[in-house]
Image (cartoon, rainbow, N blue to C red; front, side, top):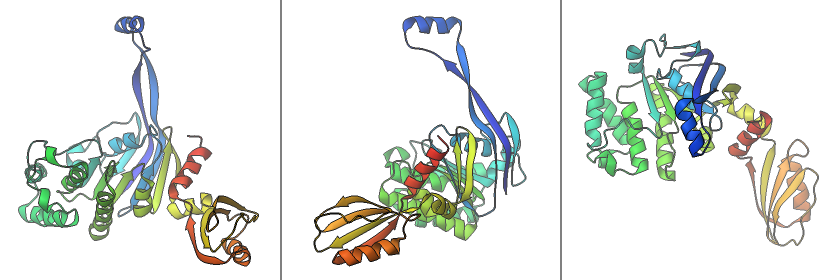
Length: 325
C-alpha cells in the first residue's frame, strides 16, 4: 500500500547571531545553512498495519508524514501510496487519507463541532447514508455525544483531540496519519483514543502510521516500529524483537517478613532495599529470573513477588544511545 524509496528533503534556514549589529548586517546580507531533514529514507507498509514511526525531536518524523500526505515535495526519491504520488495526485489522493497533527486543528474555532463535521462532509462529498453511519460510530466510540453542539474554543484539549480524530475519519479514509495525537491528554482521554484506533484498524482495516514520543502509545498499539534519527532510517522491525535485543533486564519486587541487608547475587543490582521490601534489577544475559528467585527464597521469608519487563521507554533510550542520536 505504501512504498517510500530514497526520499531526501533539505531546508534552507537563515542564520543569525544575537545583537543589534548582527541584526543590521542580516538586513543587507543574510547567511543561511542547509538542514538535511531526510536522508535516503526507504520503507514499505502493508494494508492494515499499525506502525510506530519514532525518533527524537528533529529526527525527521513530521517531515516524513508531510511528504506522505502530500504537503511537502521531496528533493529526490519516490513515494507511491495506493497508486498515487501524494504531491502530484493531491486532489484524488487526499480523499483516501486522514491526517491528525497534535498541534494543528482542522476544526472551525467558533462554530459547534457538528457544523465542522457537516462542512467536511460537503468538502469530501460524502453520501448522507455513509456520513450518518460513520458519524454514529465516531460519536459512540470517541464519546462525543455531549460535546457535539459546543464551539471548539470551549472544549478541553482532550475533547478537542477526540474531535480532531473524528474529523479526520468523516470521509472513511483507508490510511490514517497520526502525528502526536495524544499530546497533553489525560489518562482517560489517551485510553479512549488508543481503543478507538484499535477498533477502526480491526473493523475497517485502516492502515495507521503513528508518530509520538509517548512510548506507552507505541506499546499499546504497534507491532512494528520504524526509528529515524538525524534524518536517516535506523531501525525497522518488530517491537518484540526490539525488546529481546535491548530488553535483557527484568525488575523483581519482593515483599518479605524481615531482612536488614541486601543479598548479593551475581547479575543483579539492588535498586532499593528496606527491612520488608526490595526492588532488584536482573540482567538476564548473566542470570535467569528463576535462578534469582530460587536463591532469594532460600535466604528470605517471602510474602509476595512480582516480575516486570524493562519499560519500553528505557529500551528506546538504549536504542538512541546505540545510534548516537
